[in-house]
Length: 406
Image 1 (cartoon, rainbow, N blue to C red):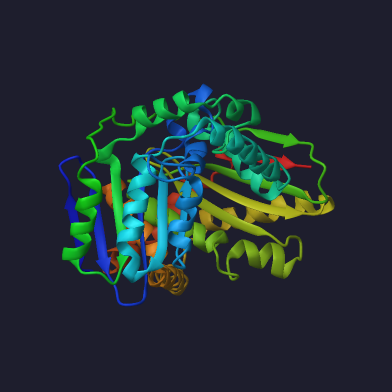
Image 2: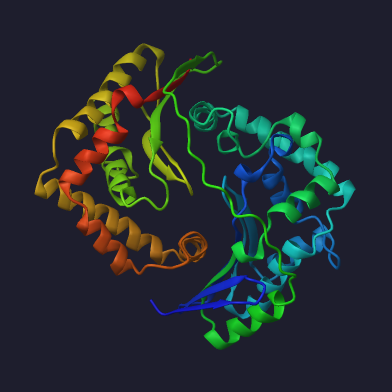
């Protein structure tokens, strides 16, 4: 992969991959998320994502929204527990329009008080809509159970009470304290030359004042397995089970991805889907997930089922975990598992918007970008013995926590 990587004097980095095609994608990823909030700031990282679109020194909210939409493009943003991203998709001839707009709303937003007050109502409605979706809410509640009394365990949206307290000052203070130019990456995938993208990037980002914050401190997580049942007015019972898992830089991470995909990944041939849905008809939605963070990670199994089938479904899920802990994968099984996840990886690279964000996050977190070939080699190097060892570490029943919505 022929990449352009460049760093400005203020620390902001660029990664660009030139591809053919009429549509291009670019974005700015900032190494700041909800885990960087204090308790009184709960939800502010996500709230800032909203109000960045509400006005800059030279644009009103309408002009921000129309700048790319007028030419058939799209401007978007997202917040996670560890990052904030502002990104755009557009026709390749509108590169400068997109780059200038992202720079403007990130560094020149004025956060009008009137717009802040209106957006509070919008975000509170977003929170309320989330509360109406137990299949989504249970994941946040589970992380709060796993990471009790820790910022990384709090949900990203905040609460109605915390959102109501936000102001220009709290927003500006959070940005000042957490937006580090050395921890920002501008990423691009599209049909534009290295020379031109470098010129546009430099033109719109070189003047940004250097900002440094203290490096996010890695934590030693204190985890105590626990089980909790919450009464909910739902037709189904919802269940999630899981444990702490490996962080982003742990060498066992690749094996964990493989195990998660075998167990309950996106394929309909995953073990949980076959056992719970196809064979027994106990669940419509069933999945497992592995989310690695900078200094920890979390593994979980989720399913929704009729209340009369809850205990049976839990027993079947635990049996699938037991099989992975007690039976080493044969060479054919292991080869199929590796080929499947490599196929997903290559397909993801064909999605240029996803690729753009992936390149940016890789540079931000690891300060390097591995090629598909290098990643596939790591996958190929995972052994059945390593998977068995990882399964016994992460899937040990005594380490598992459980949350049930009844």
